[in-house]
Amino acid sequence: MRKTLLEENLKRIISHFEEVLGHKIPKKCRETFITSVTHSSFSGEHKEFKSNERLEFLGDAVLSLAITHYLLSHYKDLSEGELSRKRAYLVSEKSLYRKAELIGIGELMLFGKGEDKSGGKFKEAILADAFEALIAAIFLCFGFEKAENFVTNIFKTELENANKIETIDAKTKLQETVQKVLHKIPEYTILKEEEANGQKVFVAEVKLNGKTLGRGKGKTKKEAEENAAEVALRNEYVREIEKSF
Image (cartoon, rainbow, N blue to C red; front, top):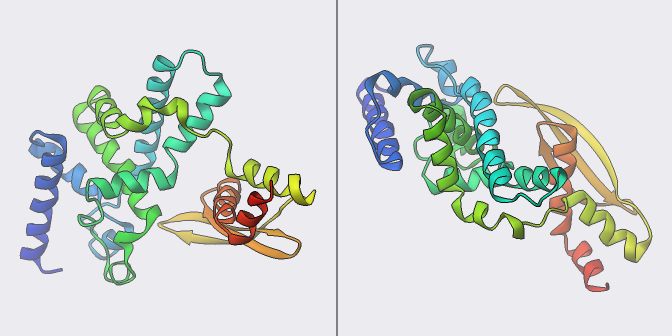
């Protein structure tokens, strides 16, 4: 990437985040916000840039705390298990990907040539991680209160309606669906492990009667199986089973 073009992109990143946050980003914090949208493929090609992986790790914790604080404060009658499931739904990869899309993170990402060509700005995992990295940047620059306000504002609708969130997980729902009609239990298999963004990713498959219902990926085996179950619930075969209830 030519220097002048890169400089323009960096200015665009800061300008965009200032618009999203509604105030100026101090000079001392600008590098951190740029890092939040720097993919490891870019930092690999430009050694003077850090990838957003460490920020993503911190942002995950800040996000979880902010969501937990809100749920505990506003839903005093919910059990620990219900609170945990609602939080898991809110901080899921798909949920974070939607928020990243909402504020246009994909168009700000700094990618290496290969990842850029492969459509990195459209990949759920990459954008979800960048969203968490952004939360970390807000926390490091402005403190937890500002980061928490950002989280509660962007999740405002979901948090205010958290009592309506379906707390049954996809694996349980799939099992109940097929077991009630066919009296059988879906079988899960971890097909392989991959490396993505410097992290291990598991690929899971769920089958019924030898028929593949869905496949999913996740940072843990449990998450991969859960994502496979979500795909399976959209499978036409499973939908037909649901209709026969």
